[in-house]
Image (cartoon, rainbow, N blue to C red):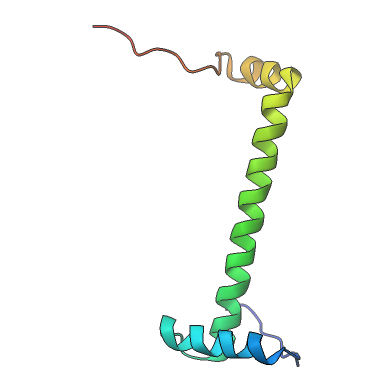
Length: 84
């Protein structure tokens, strides 16, 4: 089990009310679980943004594309389906 930390935080009333409402709607056991859910959502959003940035960088960089193709020893452009 991961160790836990105790922190004191100050929230705007509207933020607190939203989190309490979310806790009840989502059936979360306590306020800490609600904060964990919010942090998980932020982590997921951060990963999505990172993947989107990588995809944009990859599309803009022929060097990255050539390195990936050389590493995989295969073209990365979509190939038409083989006919049988």
